[in-house]
Length: 401
Image 1 (tube, rainbow, N blue to C red):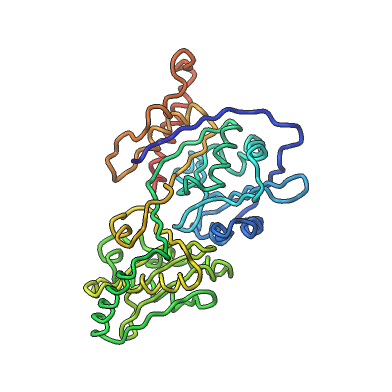
Image 2: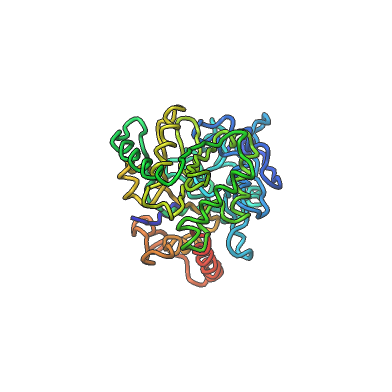
């Protein structure tokens, strides 16, 4: 069930000299890669090139360093929504998720001191977005607690669970069924499966991926906005990512061809013993032979042989994912960090409304009930924040994905 949670937190005091130094760097700062190298294996893909894959919108990075010069945090953001509102958002390639680079030993108190520093607003603005991100993501949890202590309000919009597949617990019968599909497909021509990764990313590979998408339901029945390689701008995001040798080695494309023609692919990212399923597609002309299942089975076998234990299939479309043996994992959340408390209270009501769904007010009464009763400010004092919040509410909808 989608809902909105509003967490105002309680500000605390800070010891003198405990505020990290803040600098604002144009673009994706090199500090991001330094912190990524120290992150948990499942998060080491959160590199400068990953954030730069979010598009061609100008980016800046708020870099925080400790007194000894070691990095504490590097949070890149881009503008989002109407420019007048000043909203910023952590960018990133479309999927798996968007988190931020923090020192592995970062603590709540020093992050709270950072977020309370006036200089932070120059980098993050007064309203900034982090998401989609896992609800149990360590960086997100730390930032939520720190933001509350620094006087920020955090608003969460729950998007639904991810689905996780244990490769070691897969049902072997599924692979036997795929064998039948492969024999059916072979009747139309020679079947070949190849995997591209590392130094194998070429213009020809990206052209093959775009060719499959163009012949798929995404390219045939939609406006193409959900594609990954169909347009030059979409492909440029992933071309840029593969220029980073770490990301190039983690990303892979498993491509199924018949008689030399690419007809299906699986596009994935391996990080430690976790694999994130980014996208898959197939030429609808071959739908009867289940090319999507064939290429997925090959990819899973390859991933298991490489030491992958868990495949994160993302959120949504739970039916076919459960058929594959996946189970519900941690939910994804969209987070807004808002400096003005009154504006945050009003923004929260619209942040929980998702276009394309029922459009109802998706907000639990208890978390949303704040500033009630005798302590409610008079309306006259809230007119400017209310006007700002109305604009922010429209913004919240405009940046919802």
